[in-house]
Image 1 (cartoon, one colour):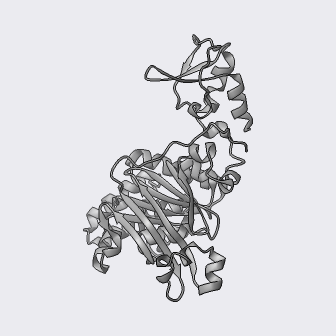
Image 2 (cartoon, one colour):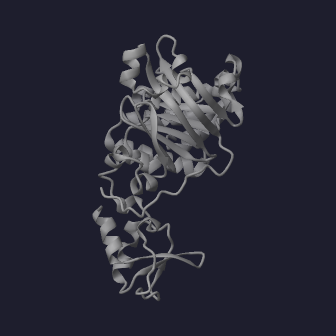
Image 3 (cartoon, one colour):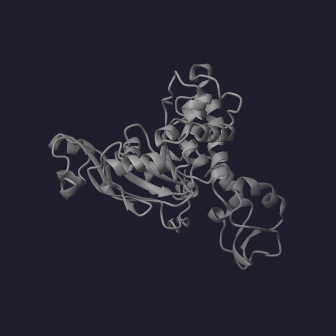
Length: 354
């Protein structure tokens, strides 16, 4: 996929105080793992070189990112990229080797066991690929389990369980056992269980990768719907680019434990940081991801500027008919300011994926 040289990705920043801030995060497996992040020579070695020299494996290497309130932040990469280790470090299911993890202003790495249990119980929940439902408990009791651990009264936790069961579309199945449900329905139970405690952040570790394609699509749509309804901050792990583009407000691409690029789907497709990202997004339909601001060109003296107007955030696919129907370039305008123009050449090039 050729990327026009004039395209430059805008800097993506988290405007609000982040819910999660990660700085210089490392996870190294092996003897004397702590020496790797602290050594400027060892920390620059490739995975293979580090393994050959020290016997250590660096799963996460100096990662930095921040997650804004209400954001769906997706971490994606191929198998072995370190994405699942990363999300487990965020909750300290895996202990990081070095770095900082700040959650709502609190240093997670400084939390003792009691505080960590409280954070996992009250502040964040995880949804895994394997549902982890208790087979001897009915749906309502599986969903209410976290509240039971908190010490909530039965009437209170059952009432809350019924609320989230309805929210995820499982009303009528409250008395069913997990083995009476399909895979997609079981994952809905896991999602309801995570929502029942009203956590601040939901962590998803490839939750839909074991599902059939149609069920997977339905569950992706369910996450989008729930995010619109409840507005939770979400960190979503996946190896599927189409899933990342569909769900993520921003996407962090990892390779061999390192961050390759972090940005919106538009930024990854419109201005990939390197050949690896460009290859990743090569088969993505640009028209389905990019907006007019990515393909517009500056107006020239030869352009007749009395044609139709469109805002810069209109998807290319949605603008095709209007642009091709116009006998002059379409103006891209925001708040009365002319940002650029889009003509037949620009729209057709984008649709063709050049």
